[in-house]
Image 1 (cartoon, helix red, strand yellow):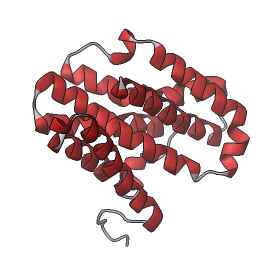
Image 2 (spheres, rainbow, N blue to C red):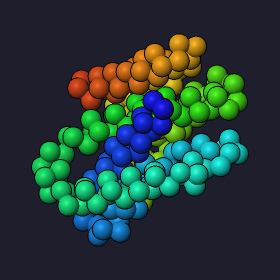
Image 3 (cartoon, rainbow, N blue to C red):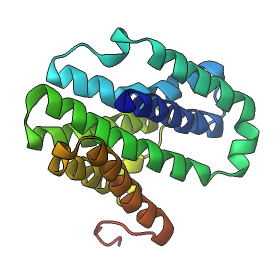
Image 4 (cartoon, helix red, strand yellow):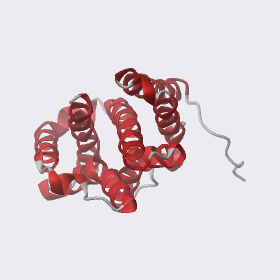
Length: 197
């Protein structure tokens, strides 16, 4: 029950981040829906295809309706959201934290493989955003932002290490991912880069 509720929240939040990008690019309402879908269901779709299990939104179309609702709401309110553009970073951090844990939890329950669970946690939380940014003709956020995939890794790893604690592992994993991402946003922390000449 808790995981399902978190999943719906994560889909809504990530859908809003995709729709915000569509608004920034001046897209029409269809563009809002497309870019909302990418981060909302893209990473989970890739995860399920890799694990060779039914893709989650084909089994429960609620995910699609949530995405449509998020895209529509963002289309209506995009002027306001553009004026508070930093909200996207925090919404994205929340979605990242939730999806990193949910991806790891689903993978661990299906395979029992901790390493694969951590990898799929990262894939679930970042792959859809990569597709979103490519469609929007932007350098993917994961390649240019402060400790982005690192935060997803921390969340997934925390969950896997504490999985026997059930509900506590979920919340601690989400908290770990969000904290790392929040520190990156607040202090501009990033992984080492090459020097530009």
